[in-house]
Amino acid sequence: MGAGLDRHLVRGAHRTPASPAVCDHHARRRDSSPGDHPVRLHSSYRIIGARDDEDPIPVLHALKPFGVSRVLLAHDSITSYLGALGDQLGVVTASGTGVITLAVGRHNVARVDGWGYIIGDAGSAFWLGRHGLDAVMRAHDGRGEPTVLSHTIGNDFDDIEAAYLELHADPLMVSRIAAYSATVTAAAEEGDHVSRDICVRAAHELAHSTVTGLRQTELTDADSPAVGLLGGVMKSQLIHTAITREISAAMPGARIVEPLGEGLDGAAALPTVSPESPLGQRIHVAQ
Image 1: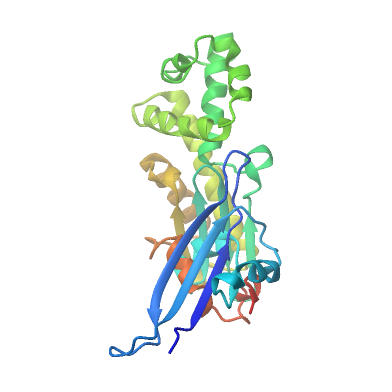
Image 2 (image 1 turned 90 degrees about the vertical axis):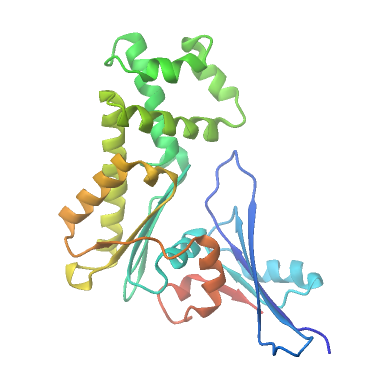
């Protein structure tokens, strides 16, 4: 007997011009007895670099020669949500190089931000790094207060007044600027006033997106919605504490919870989502 294949492609959408597509893969055995050789393989994929409304049919056709019989396409914010909260009502804000918030209510789903570093991503690592660089330049030309960032970030450049030219010419500009977020959060923890102000403002942006998502899905204190805070930016204790405080003030019934898992776990859970549910309606299937 030949093994039946039921593979699922999950395609996400958070990308920057500086980053290529990335594929995550999950596979597990199912529908097999201990003594059987045939194995039905259930595979899930998440490919970063797509829109959330892509047609899954061309993808299925491209993968059929490899034994793929079923394709599920979903924005990576959906896999992050499922991985973090499962089927709970609530909101997930994931802040890494970029940021996106996804809220799921009883009747609808709301996406907040995730519009990229040029016109969005408020509170992301790029946002923090960009504001850190701005603080360095303001301190340099007299518009701003002195900051330790003038040394920790400024010393990375041979000529600080030519920093903008060097950054524009760097093909890894986005990730390079985002990496400065760690410098900003470290300086804030050590007492640098300017860095602390940047972190507090980032926390406000992230909390605002989170609460906006809850309100857009009409979730209230009575629903006790779950709140998942994901990504490298959330590792800053200062930022995480400030976000939690603002969310609790705006919606006391909201519960800040530890993530159940990660995006790859959410990708594996896609086939279990009811097509009639608000979240299921955003998962595109071809078979």
